[in-house]
Length: 187
Image (tube, rainbow, N blue to C red):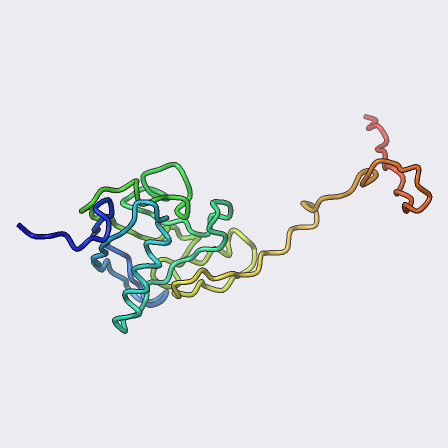
């Protein structure tokens, strides 16, 4: 009987079939990787970080994937996981935990495939059609890449419509600007 090399019996060994593509003009292919001793409490992106650390240690090219906030807010991490957008749960990829999978599972990981999002490298796609500006591709380092946030459109910025704080009887407090009112619409 073989003994398990897992540090925790709850941890998983997985087979990953990951889309690899050197650049926009490369044809691309699915490549198979084995990852071992993955905690069910890891997020999917943390599991990819572990795989990239293993690839770096072997001197192999890490997998490029996009992530920004890793808080389930921005959507930059969107992937197709085993044929489902973001994976088997109704959440963002960065909030998908490995407990959604079973020990021994084979997971296929691909980028979004749409004409509007051409592949830049591996799992990174060009999202400029969403933002209106081209953002640099994420690095394949195992630490998250912090890209600058796009400048909000002026029509979406918050406008102050009244005093920022309640009036104060204190003479030392600066005066609040007068509240703005709208004229009623006439048709």
